[in-house]
Image 1 (cartoon, rainbow, N blue to C red):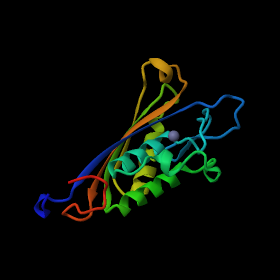
Image 2 (cartoon, rainbow, N blue to C red):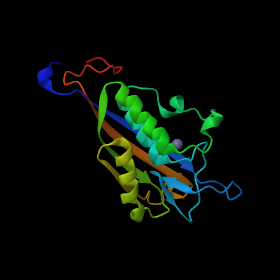
Image 3 (cartoon, rainbow, N blue to C red):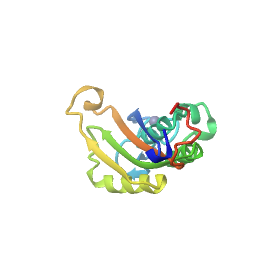
Image 4 (cartoon, rainbow, N blue to C red):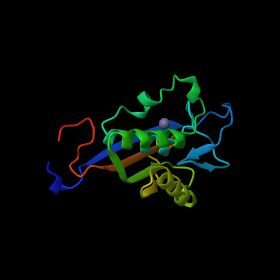
Length: 178
Ligand SMILES: [Zn+2]
């Protein structure tokens, strides 16, 4: 690739899912994209179980050829118990930037039967955009009562991120041949 080709682009995808916590579990709020959704069952997880932040982080890390969120922030780390996943996402953004790449955009789809996320999408989008410093989108889809998600057992999120080399010639330290 030559400088005339413009910045090198890399795409990454991420997926995450968490089951709803049992009623006996310690009460935590439901958090998606950094938005606290009151009055809904929380998700089980070592951190705050923010599936949107986790999928977004894996999309970004994947685009940069970096180890995934489970390796970067292991759930065996007691310091990460109840962790704010938007903070982990911010760290993932810094890891990507350290490879010589900037975030271009992020698109996500949250898949769950309940709750209805329509009124929360704009706040989730704004939180993500603020953390990534790039345009972000959050969509919600119902699984049409199919499978575990359709039975309302949890929430899943799919994310796609695009990153571009800061150096027009694509000379980032990304772990990929060009
Ligand atoms: Zn997760």
